[in-house]
Amino acid sequence: MIFANARMYSPAPGAAAAWRDLFRWLARSADVPLDLIEHAAPAPLAELWKRRDLGACFMGAWPLAKRAAQVIPLAAPVMSDAHAQGRAVYWTDFVVRFGADFKRLEDTFQHRIAYTTKDSHSGYNAVRHHLLGFLDSKDGKRKRFYSEVTGPVQTPRAAALAVLEGRVEVAPLDAYAHILLRRYEPNLALGLRVVERSEFAPMPPLVASAGLDQRRVARLTDALIGAAVDPEARPILARLELKSFAPVDLANYDLTLVWEKEAIERGYTEIA
Image 1 (cartoon, rainbow, N blue to C red):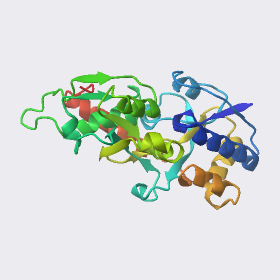
Image 2 (cartoon, rainbow, N blue to C red):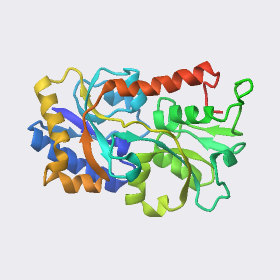
Image 3 (tube, rainbow, N blue to C red):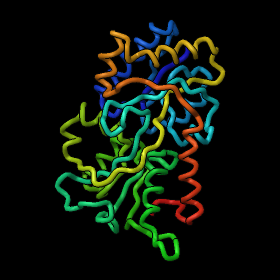
Image 4 (tube, rainbow, N blue to C red):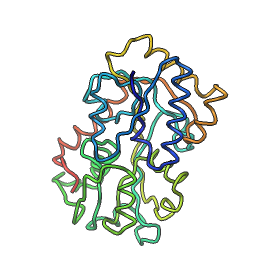
């Protein structure tokens, strides 16, 4: 049997339960049995992407662009949040403690920042790219923005806790994970405040092993694309703060490689 997993977007137990319900619906709707497995942090998500029995699992935008595993995209979530503009996109929220004096990201410079993992787009690549805008425009030399860089903290929830517990002053949160935290752990999320957002990037999709039978891939994809008009799936999408799922154009994910290349060319290879 092939498996399904949504660890990437299960920042709270309520979100994880909603994903399990969606995967159960998906298995029935597509007539493709799915084994719902656990893969808790700090176990690397890359271990799942390389499994031949992968049926439906989220893969990061940057690793997907790098072809870090032999997978085939199924569909990408479209968030209900108005900032997503009805598109399968996401962004990074730079968060600080709600009561902190910081008004802009620049105010956090010379303090401490966290990152999730170095292969994460929202938790590293997008952060690095965003900071390029603050490099000295006269000579473009690498600049140290933060007194301390903490990581890998592994997950967006852990990044949020690093801020709330005072271990760092600012951290990047995957916008969708942040939205789910607001819904399912409001007491935690209310302690945070967004001081800046990154530019849009294509939303991490659900993927399957490239070796999976193409008929099953097609049924899984068709079911996900049709979820928004399915009376059983719609309430589950609402619990996940999703409007729908959209087809995936792999070429869109090359944006993450462009951002990586820009950072390397400007000599800002690591968050600092």
